[in-house]
Structure formats: structure tokens, C-alpha cells
Amino acid sequence: MSEKLLRIASYNIRKARGLDQRRRPERTLQVINRLEADIVVLQEADKRMGVRHPAIPRRMIEAETDFYLAEVSENAISLGWHGNAVLVRKGINITGFERIVLPGLEPRGALRLDLDTGLDPNTGLDPNTGGGLRVIATHLGLLRRDRRAQLDVLCQLRASHLPTVIAGDFNEWSSRTGLEPLAARFAVHTPGQTFHARRPVAALDRFALSHGIDLRDAGVAQDAVARRASDHLPIWSDIALPLADVIG
Image 1 (tube, rainbow, N blue to C red):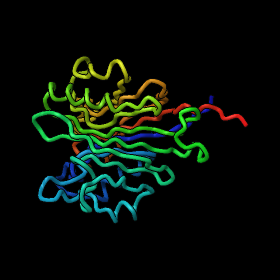
Image 2 (image 1 turned 180 degrees about the horizontal axis):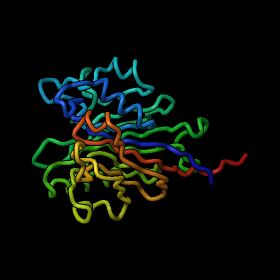
Image 3 (image 1 turned 120 degrees about the vertical axis):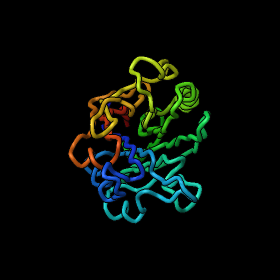
């Protein structure tokens, strides 16, 4: 059995507005580039007013990164859905996506992306050989009862034939309660304290990995730029995806 290593990151970019109250998308992209990730899920990637203009111009993503934007918006302006957006390293292909409306008092949503990581271009997403990954990007609600209901919905998106990662701002302050819906199907990993970026005291940002995904390393980006660029620090995880050996 061989494997593929990938780095996934999650970052609540606060609409590219830093702790100096200046909106500087170039600074946000500097933080993202330093993560050296293959897939980056973003929260608060769009402004709330009007047609939800992006916090980072599309042309800037194209010019200053090695990522392409997952085209999941319902219009040609926003970066994502309910503020959730996904950047994908060139060479990794999106084979399908879905916009998910989440229950709760606040408007919340999630994105489901199925990816071909390029493990085996001849077999693609064949469950016998691997090569696929499902990523669910989300920003959960402020109320715990809503978050539990939202996690119930996200758990149903786990694919039986694809390793699945849920990543995002879980908005859960407790390390012992609130994430129970994930317990049977996912292992929750909390790389560290991410909020508030100036003086982190809460681990709001997390990954949940389906069975079969091996977590090799994880952490929180804490350099000086990251501590100014948003009120959240970004998290990253290095994961190993199983790939069955192909004979013949």
C-alpha cells in the first residue's frame, strides 16, 4: 500500500482586514503562500454587502499564487458560498462540488469539493486505487445547538469511497463538548489556539478526518504577518491518503 502526502490549510481571513483595521489582500495572500499548502479553505472570503464582493480580487489570486479558485459562487463576483472559498494547487483537479445550506438561526453554508489529487491519472477516482479526496469547507454558527445540527448535516456528506476532510472555523470554544456528531465517523484534530490572533486563547479552527486518513503533522502559523493579517491564525495539517498498489 502506497500513499500520497498532502497539506490542507484553513484560514478565516476576516475579509482581508487586519488588526490594524486596514484591508490588505496582498498581506492575506502572503500569509496563504507561506503555508505551502495544496488546498486552502477560507472563511469570510467575501464581504457581506450587496452581491458579496470578494475580499481578495480574483486577478490577484491568479497573479500572486500557484492556486486556482474553486468556482463555486452563484454569481461571477463572489469568491465562494456564504463566505467559504477554496483555493486549489494547480495540478489537482476538481471533479465535482456542491453548495450546502446549513440549518440554524444565522445564514450558514458549506462547500463539498471532490478532488482528483493526481495520484494516478489512468485510474482517477477508482476506489480500488485511490486518488480522490473529498473536502468539506465550512464556517459553523455561533450557537452550540446550531453547530451540532450543522455537523449532523456535514457528517452525511462523508463519502464511502473517498477519504473525507472537514475543515474550517468550527466556532467551538470547548475542547470537550460540542463536536459529538463527528465522533462516530471522524477524528477531530485541533492544531492549536487560533483566536484571537493578537493573543490566542481559543482553538476555534479545526480539521476532522475520516477513518483511513493518517495525520502526519499539524500546526498553527504564528509568524508576525499572520498575527496582523486577521483576527484568526491559519492552521495546516499534513495528511497521508491511502493508495492501493496497482499491479499489471
